[in-house]
Image (cartoon, rainbow, N blue to C red; front, side, top):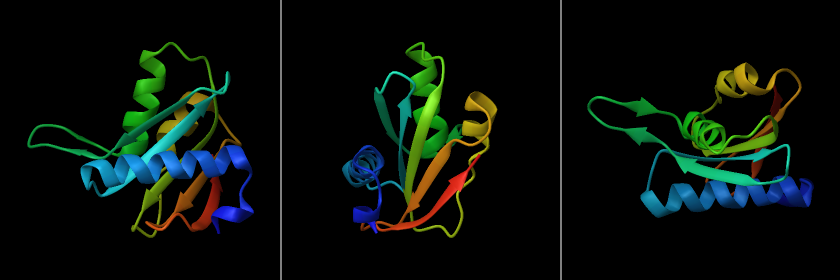
Length: 111
């Protein structure tokens, strides 16, 4: 449940839900960098480009010059979340909250 998360992780879920709702995308994601700044994104599904919400959120953080990530959240109806992009950029043990569309945390996956 969202209330079981820390305030900072609950904020990530809220941002991810908002990104998803704004665009009616399949998923929304948010990441928090090592300075505490957040970046939110949604799925991109075009004829020539497909990005998960998490891939785009990490790309936005990278484009802003971040040096590391503290945590992430993905809001999706899917049963699993691919955290490879977070692991590749930020390394091991970064928590990624997997939440459903209502913001209920289903799982916390660590890279």
